[in-house]
Image 1: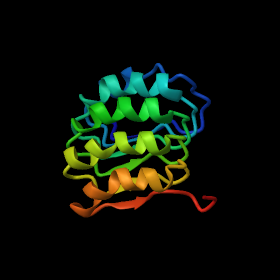
Image 2: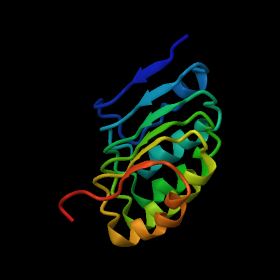
Image 3: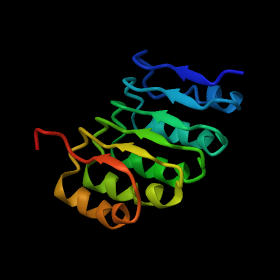
Image 4: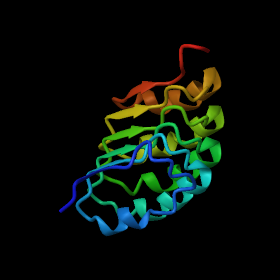
Amino acid sequence: ALAHLDLSSNRISGWRHAEVVRSCHALTRLNVGFNKIGAEGAEVISKVLGEAKVLAHLDLAYNKIGAEGAAVLAGVLGKCQALAHLNLTGNDIGAEGAGMLESVLTECPSLAELDLSGNSIGAEGVERLVDVLRNCVVWCSGSDSRG
C-alpha cells in the first residue's frame, strides 16, 4: 500500500484532488508543498484529513493558505492522532493564523515538529502560542529572519 506521496511543486492551485488522500488508507507522509493551493485548497484537504488515521508527516509549505486556511486546518488536524511533523512554512498565516493553531498543539499528542517559519507571525503570533508551548515539547520556528 502507498505510504508516501509527494506532489510538491506541481502547480496544483486550488487543490481539488483530496480524494487521493481518502483512498490511501496507509498514507503516512503527504507533501503538497509549493503548489499555491490557497485557503480553498486547505479547506478541501481538511475534509479528508480526519480520515487519515496514520498520517504522520504533512507538508503544506508555500501554499498561500493564509489565516483562513490555517483556521480550517486547525479545526481538523486534531483528528490526525498520528501526526508528528507539520510544515506550514511560508503560508502567510500571520499572527491570527498562529493563534488558530493553538488547538493543534494541544490536540495532537504525537506532534513533535511544527515549522511556522516565513509566516510573519511576529511577536503577537508567538504570544498566542506561548502558553501552550510551555506545556509541550515542540520544535517551533516562529518567524523568519527578515522580521
